[in-house]
Amino acid sequence: MQVQTLTSSLPFLGPDVAADYDTARVVILPIPYEATTTYRRGCENGPAAILDASQQVEYYDDDHDREWWPVGLYTHKAIADTRNGHHVSSQEMLTEVQNTVARLIADGKFVISLGGEHSITTGIVEAYRQAHPREPFTVVQIDAHGDLRNEYEGSIHNHACVMRRIVDMELPTVQIGIRSICKEEADLIRERQLTVIRAREIVLQPDWMQRALAAIQTEKVFLTIDLDGIDPTLIPGVGTPEPGGLNWFSLLTFLEQVFQNHEVIGCDVMELAPITDSVVSEFTAAKLVYKLVGYQAVAKGW
Image 1: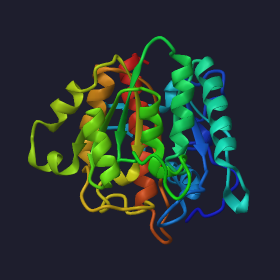
Image 2: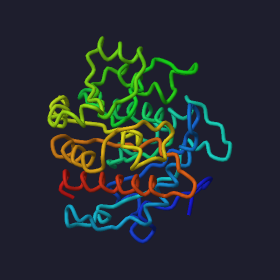
Image 3: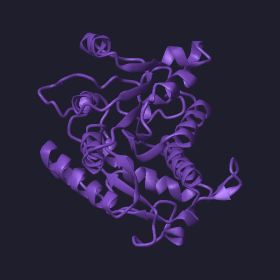
Image 4: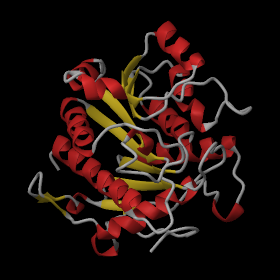
């Protein structure tokens, strides 16, 4: 069934395996916010579509010979919800997101946020920055786009500016799968010597993964995944699809290596815009979220 304007959320994987908040180690946080989409709209429906599709995901992970749901999965109510014409300003969204994530961090939860447009990540990362004031962490971005514009269409909180806001926080970044930038972004990458692994390098240079992992110089990592970073033949339901991108197994191999070698403090999965009469994008996204749960469970020994 295609999800369009659901205002309530099914629990991730389904009610039969949902944990209560107190016992859950992992919180799935839906953030159905959309305000600055510049091409194909619909990402405000992404979180509900992922949660709906997750009902069809097998609990058993044959890569690890385990089921991950017993670690405790709790699905939070949606926040910063713009569905059904509800207006939420960018500042209101960022405040609500930061405050909610900060509370979840304080409660010791591993948070996987589901967007919604990529501008949401600014509020999420700010919550982690406030929670770790003395220990920097690297923001690892999977994305087709640099998202490094200072402003776009009159807003510094456009989805095309999210990584510029994070660079402005003076956090180190590693960008993976990039294949579309403007001259302003190219100039900034050179001036700030930002680490960018372009999509063509992933295809042509077998050592790309080793170089990307070596570029992560902090113990802690925050992982932000814009689904358009993945090849659009796998996930066509995104706002701004770009040819090329990571294939499924390269993506999973890289992510698992990040979890094995670093402390991943939180994740988000952004920019799913469901396509009518197709479930491939949301199902793939749901399976990706479950893989993230598994990688954290292995890393933490849960």
